[in-house]
Image (cartoon, rainbow, N blue to C red; front, side, top):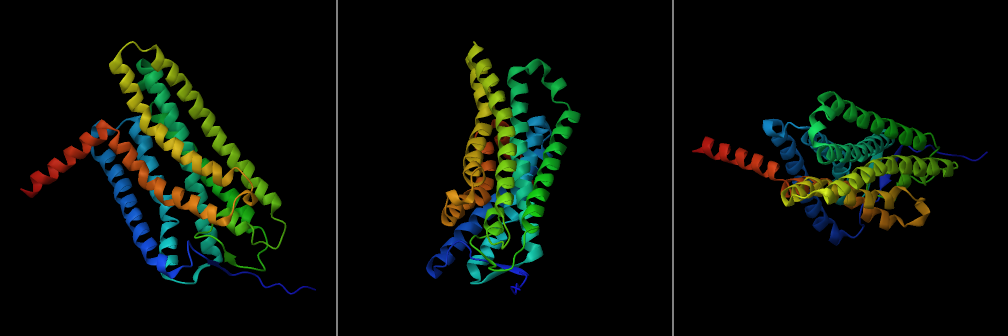
Length: 311
């Protein structure tokens, strides 16, 4: 009978094994994380403090900032510690927890982007019925559904992955416990688990993409029918930030999860993962604040109040 030792912890290889790159990477990523924290917490604070931002659009944006903060915080501290410690070890349970929270919050963001597209469709295509369409109850139901879908998806992927046997290598060729990187270490047949990941990710992504595509199709048709230049540019500015966020997020996630892990190398996966685990959460508040007059005005108002209180 073959002697098998059960894995009790995993060793994360991290981003690089080159000592000369570890400190520069640490400085870069801690700066990215600080901008991420300040940007997303700042966005949440502005939306909560300014009554003019208490609308469905900013309600969803507030939740998007919270989710960005959560899923980047599930990963970034591990990355930073991995750049300082040569052998970055993570316990079996901590690895499962990290995988669950990351998968859950990424899925919530996926569904939130779909809900935000529907909100923009209602605002641009049915402006007279907008307040009766996007009521507080509707917004709450959409948001709760996003969170429920995310936590369900996280449970499925984590349960599926950790139902496998780990009895050989415990070295994860990644900087965090991502499903594909941990799954390939199993000494049992993981191909069914891999296909579950691909099919579930495909369903979740394309469900949201269909909502986003149909919403923007109707928005585009409505914009073309507009005779007012002011209305035309207002509609474009309303949707521009969301469309930018959607393009960046889905481009990276589709590359990572809607294909078998054998179709790309672990190094390529690491590079893509850096982008969507750290860079995208940092970019979202910048994209929405730099292109949004309401957010800029709210920020000016807060700065002016802060100046007056210091005088």
